[in-house]
Amino acid sequence: MTDNNDGNLKVAENDVVVPGEILAEGMNYLPSQGTYREGNHVRASRLGLVRVDGKVIKLIPLSGKYLPKRGDVIIGEVTDITMGGWNVSTNSAYNAMISLQDASNEYIRRGSDLTKYYEVGDNVVAKIFNVTSQRLVDLTMKGPGLKKLEGGRIMKVAPSKVPRIIGKMGSMVTMIKKVTNCNIIVGQNGVVWLKGTEPEDEILAVETIKKIETESHVSGLTDRIKEFLESKGRTVVAEEEGEE
Image 1: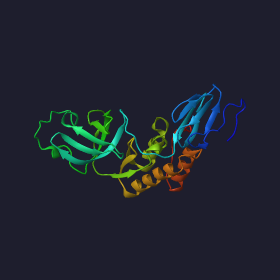
Image 2: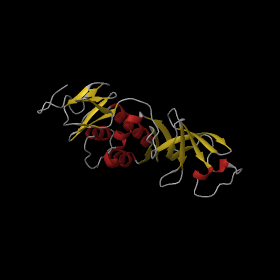
Image 3: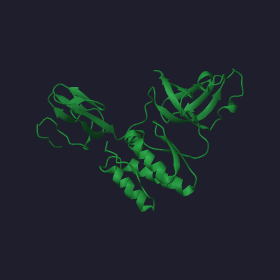
Image 4: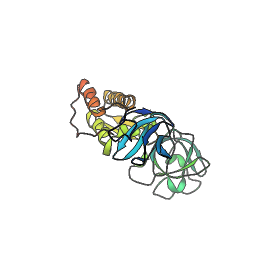
């Protein structure tokens, strides 16, 4: 751990810290995501990568399961059909449900053949609009980009790595889409769907996403990914992305 010039910051950008570790002393720094204040200290509440934005300290988690949050857009798989709707896996300990009224913009009458809309095994892009204390998640299919996915392939990544895969303002995933000619959707729950016109394009997209997941803690990640894609014979033209 290293001090900065004013002696208050006890860690450096990109340091990996453990729960309880002191990140800063005094009142100059404010705790944010993954940190908390204890008396005169800001401490880490989990294993993570240090990010300092001005006087705000936060941690990017390096591990952990997905915890559903209201407003998240996820990719889930239909696991069962009931009288009231569809059960959907969320890649978490929470069970999710799409009710008849939230499944489509059209009216679905109770007793209708629900397989006309979604069948068991279908993958869907859905939005969370409610999470209960009983670990139940309510999903909606009403909104831009929410849909059943056709074809393509599914891969899973650590949910904590999703921000790095997406990049600032979507810059990283946009670069991968352009270079690999793939349509890519990244769910906040760590489930990724991708579909390319050629198998080799899909394979390269998968390799690139796995590389980001593995090296998400490394500085200069954008340049590393550009070099990787260029080593595969692809031309990369992308805007510069600041490191998170």
